[in-house]
Image (cartoon, rainbow, N blue to C red; front, side, top):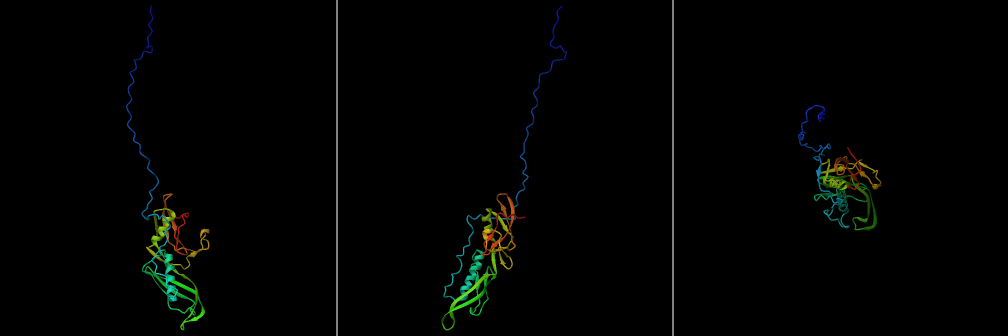
Length: 241
């Protein structure tokens, strides 16, 4: 008797041929949205970064009076130059005048400089006269000495912002002030803490400025400070609110 060996020893039906799996739909990837908020530059003014420090151009000042000109005219020109130096810009319509005085008797004198339509006092103190014995019959020749300084000075908006852009390498800046301000010095002076300006005074006019920090892409606030001769100080290392 013959025995048959069957391959389907388990007795189940043959398995169907494998089918091709359905293709998966294409997956669309979306770049993640940045969580960094956009910087709002609407409160700043855009301007070109000066290639060099914005030095004042005082070539438009009236010529300096000759040594033979009346003393009051020479002092009036000196007053105009001091106020213009502080502003760092010539006002073609600026005027200055000093009252008549006797340097042998007067010890205090106030001259007036009108700059951009606003009056700034220029005060002479400790006036002293030392004659040399020569006279024309009406007045004696000699040397007049005194100390003098303006008690107020103009701050020019565009000039301040130009220095801010230059010192911090940014196109975007703004200072909270009108086109120009007559700044009375009074008690707004203080000694600077920086050794780089040792021996100088700093004026603090209470004006706030803002700038776009090009490195961090954030807006920083810096206080406007001025050297005693009017040049703006904008410490790039100082952070604000």
